Length: 598
Image (cartoon, rainbow, N blue to C red; front, side, top):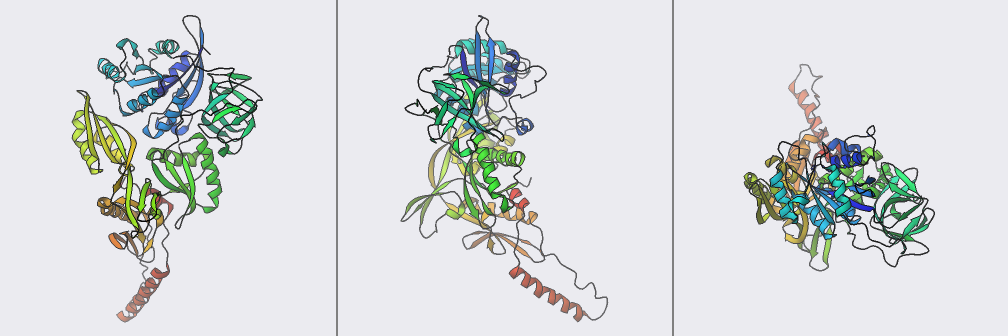
């Protein structure tokens, strides 16, 4: 155990985690030059296309130290985006140390601070690394001062590195051996192993990734999952390199995988504890947080016959992404589907894309919203996940919405525009701190619902990409919310209903009506698109009818003949409008949320 080091790489998005991980793999000869490619650990096409890490990736390296000792390094590369912070929290729970990467050209940003505090809560040993020191725009002295102010280290403790050129990689590998403590644990104690990730293989079933805190596990052992109570045989155990390498036995302190032939994804829960059936541990490993979804949306199959396939796909996806939660629901407009909880809008987008690519599931997503708490005059509180759950106004006392504390770090010249944006989103400025003369941290309290749609994109555009953003939930607060219904020819479309603040209802309603007018195909009859709060119509657009030229056959003759044909057409259109129904195409559901007209 004294030769093992478990550590993760944490940083803000785009600070060079994956590139530096590539250099560590090269230096330790874990991967040959022939197999080397950019972002080696990012194995999803989606990650390569977008240039972001979506999943944590664990890999084992072997390093021959200058003192002649051979060390085993278990590295976990983590995502940097705020929507994937749950991946980071799970990785940190399996480590004793963390490499804190800071981009020398950008300095400390919001997610850097957030991930650092997460690591400190778990008492991890922090190794600060100044990355991208080879760039012309690198502010080495200034950013070093920021790191010293943040974590209170000495300037000699900061390692200068470059993921591009490989500078400082050997220093990092040496520092991991000296600074990060070896794992503590008793190999002779009853087995206690934390499941920190899992995946589904169509041939071998569920593969669980674990970190052994205490005890020893051998191939063929009978194991029990403490929380789910399931008992299985360890058909194969091993360590994680670029491929899975089987091993006959694994001891305390090791990170590895287990295959038990489980085919049902519900039987494995991330955060569960693995123990032996014959010599179980007395308690499971504690302190693993349950995920708290921030944004909710309905996901429905385009064809209702695909409902069960969609359920299987979501269960398999949940294995690989434990922050996804879902439950069945029905909609009048869309049929059977699932109410899903996400950590943010990027998370929702990624899940939708993965369903399409990995499982061939084309889906419709309803208007995303957040969870509210409604208080009635008699029955107490009730959680509202969809607008249809809102109690009748006659019994409703008040509705409370979730508030967040948002930390925005930017250059001072953008303060005015950022404040205007946050005030528009019903935010309140609570703190303003100058980290340096060139960097200011603004703290706002604002409703979570206001940042769901376009906040992040607008923040990036007004600050020219310089502002970084992080948030966490703080409280629920009473708010004047109304249910906004979208009606087509007087019929409400429940999938387009939303809960909005009264002050924003009219502009939001107008935008959706205009968007639907562009997206809905014209019919033989006129279509009225209305936005309504209760019985009050607050916005309306009209799609005119397709007109068939019924007088084309009349060439010459009396005008009364033409008028008779037009009157007959008018009666037919009136009857058609009474019995005709408007079908909302899938494209409209997918596009209606892009309210900026893009």
